[in-house]
Length: 279
Image (cartoon, rainbow, N blue to C red):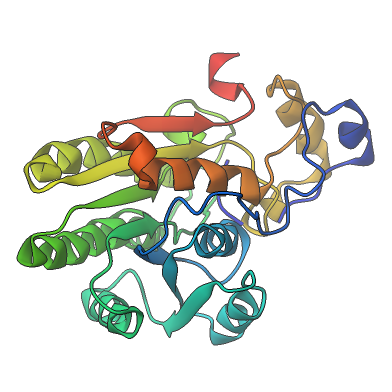
């Protein structure tokens, strides 16, 4: 479904397809596709956000890793690939003032950010009949409003500098299909992210700023660890590759969308889901 380290049953490992041996570790690419770039990654303290920060640094980018949890950020910085520059920024990425602090931190990397990964998210479950107003507001604040505010702050700085850039929003397969019961609020928040991605891409194209989304399926992260054992087998049967994704596999897609190789790609969503949406 999305961001942060689930369990994978032993039986699933035996029948999975195409699982890379080192998918959970920071990738070391032969070509530095993001050399000289400055990136902001929200929710970078663990799981997918950490994997993205590591991969961007491995690809040559300077990275501001933003998260509310200082201890988690310390581990992200400590695990950075050799030569990778990761600057921690403890901030609330769902609030404008917190995001201003994050983008101001890019000055330590030598300029404004030209790459943004909106990854910070919360997973909330429960029946439609039981969900509280406060919980709906919390999920939308973090999952939808946060990325919108971050993109605004990012774009304003780039437009003022007359520089191009790229945004990748982390959406979810739940924005496309009803994957599990009890995820209506979460699915709605991610569906809004997809709609915003398309609209923002059209709005910012004139400035050379591309906006795309990645829709992960089930990722082996802490956020998805709440899926109980009884749910594992049915979920895996819905994934043709019969396994969850490793965070590094999603990070690889993010890198491609940020890099010049995707220079004519904007306003789209890339499903990285083991074939889930096509099954």
